Amino acid sequence: MNIIEYPRKLLRLDWLLLFLAVGVSLAGLAFIRAATWASEQPGLVVADSKQFVWLILGVMACLATAMIDYRVYFRFFPFIGLASLAILVITLIFAKEIQGSKSWIIIGPFSVQPAEFTKVGFILTLSGFLALRGKQVGDFSTFLGAMVITGIFVLLILAQGDNGTALVFLPVSFMVMFVAGVSFLWISISIFSLVGLGTFAYFFLIPDYVRDRILTFMDPTRDPQHTGYHLLESLRAIISGDLAGKGYMQGVGTVTGRLPKNVSHTDFIFPTIGEEHGFLGSAALILALALILFWGLRIAFLAGDRAGTVLAVGIVALFFTHIYQNIGMTMQMMPITGIPLPFISYGGSFLVSCFLALGILQSINIHRATSNKVPLL
Image (cartoon, rainbow, N blue to C red; front, top):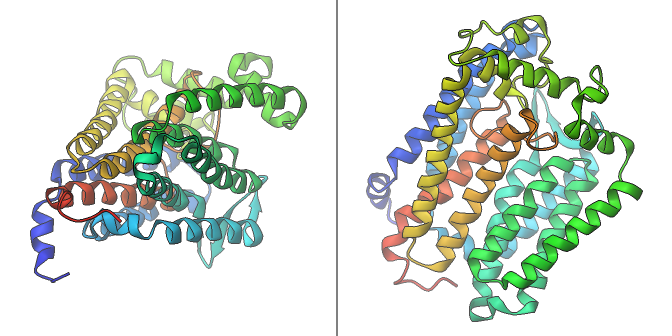
């Protein structure tokens, strides 16, 4: 590609979507600061500064990804899939176990969670496979192949002990298959089968701590000092925020430590927002995230081919699943899992992976004008 094309592509960026994501991320820095400023741990006190560095890297990754025609990713989807699986296997072998999960690889002063990047690789792999099937996408063999791809990714992440991340793959997979044209009958059967398998696993297979999380979701008062503690304090913080909140860095839950310091800036950052900024601030944040989702669907609708549409919907489904699960678990709408809030929660790997996914959306938007003129594969 001629270097002169880069400025032209930059002009075709969806700047509103990029500004929305960066704006929400900058707000996330402030929320992280509010959740960690009273911490006695030196590493948490500078969490917002670390996140700012990851934000810069994320924006750079987004712009670099956007410059590559998304059809190139489709052409190399088998290699992307194999590389993603290799990363998961390497993580399983070499990662240090932290709180029962082998998800983190420590490189000097940095810790990286490779599974976050494989989410994007999974969407590219599944979308590429479905695009390759063409008119046979409605056949049972296509559905079976898509489920095998999904199953391999899910099993490797479950082997790491990261149950929350594994669960993200399933709704994303079903949404991608549905939009691609896979038979709704087969998708429905698989969903009901998974519900039945989950019921069986609940009674006979899953460990006690996972069962406790499910029971806590149903009734957090059954064990208020242990398994129900996070949820009860989360609900108290959100409710205490009332309409306009207590003010920035004035959250009682954060200062007193009722909102545990190890999760108040990651998985449970939404209660901090709810307590300090109330219903109005929380609603504004949800509205901004909803606008990112809507703009992603707009790109999917305007994509020049089915493959671009499927890929864009997969990325939007990934964002939506994280948003719904994260906010839902803090408000007793979903079971508690270790799912961060896109562009908000602390975590460099997750933030950069979100911007990588955003870059693919931008690529679909930039290159849609010629997508009908060049063969997909």
